[in-house]
Image (cartoon, rainbow, N blue to C red; front, side, top):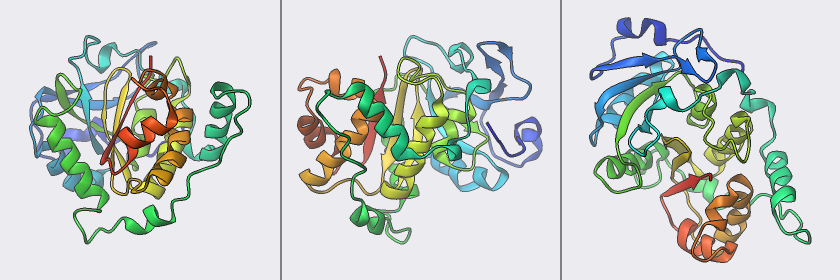
Length: 265
């Protein structure tokens, strides 16, 4: 994967106010040639992510919350494989989703195309905290760190990335391995959702992903169109639901929801 210079080796000189933590370079093939991320030793608290989001991007780092308490340990044990990742910008998001759709959808179901997002793209507004992607992300993370959400032991981390969509690929995250081994292809979809829905990648577990959403669908028709993209991206979200239909998923998981949670079996 093509990357910019990694600032983590000189983290101590960057002037960031960090709690106690350490650098992680462990991969499935042994130590990586440079640190993949910085991870705090102790649990994160509301406000921690937002504080780093204001300062870390200026030095080429982005904050993300990692769950080290779901029975899989921390990222040192996640079998990270950065060497296997392609560059997200080399992929077309719709082509990636259509390929997945053709593989997992019913044989008679044609790919419906990307959801129409003209309203969503116009809805994000940095001047309005309710629709500013960074403000919405901060609220979602604070709620997560306040105990509202699926993460058991959330820790603050810093990853060398310019876009939040690239965070999973930058660390070689293999959470969706049973669906796709090259996370760069999924990051291409996350980039598209950044542009169209104002999402931010805010948290990762061993096989879970949480994104904030500044401009979620506001009508059932919009949510149903988007549900097809989610099914292609993460079929388990629908298959493992209590009502495994796109309509039920759209109504209960997408309509006016400020966060999307993905889980791969």
